[in-house]
Length: 252
Image (tube, helix red, strand yellow):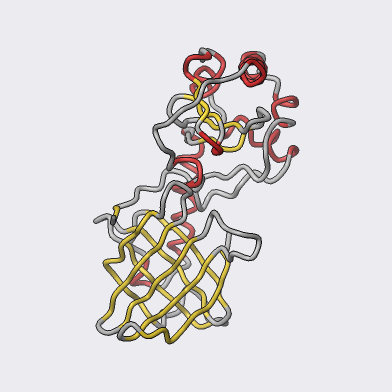
């Protein structure tokens, strides 16, 4: 099924979950109560010790990579509104959702089975402005015809190429690529429009597809897989025959 994806945060593995929810046992209730208390007391040091790093933020805002950075950025990420949501929450608002973890309010906050924070699907006013500022700087360094877009989705490096995928204002996706060694301010070697995204199951893996005549460009973004699964796989087909297959990784 094709989707027009509005990516609120890059924690995609946490936001595509089934409706099935399990009951919380006493140990998990205790973990939640501890978390609620820490936020009620605004105990940043102790909260920083129960976070699984990196804590992702909406791309291109950089992730929070360690406890020290968490403490420095706490007020930027956790404003009064989200602190109140967490600290005033009731146990009934928390649900365990299979192996994905435990969510508050349908996924605004996720913790794992040990009570550690693994995802925050919330954006403070500070982060909204930060996102806007980063995007403006990004646009300033782009080739002229690429400056118009709504959100940057991925920036990718493969063996031979630098790619970027942007979401446009009409909710379609654009693909641009350069041979490695070129700058994004230079004219891309290839620009493709009208890309579609296909969400693969509940794990968050997704595929972007762009078609240009006889050619099909497919970008696999893998969030769930084995230790050998690459973050990115770029495949180009001509009349259904694979003519390019390169693994890659995200440039953050």
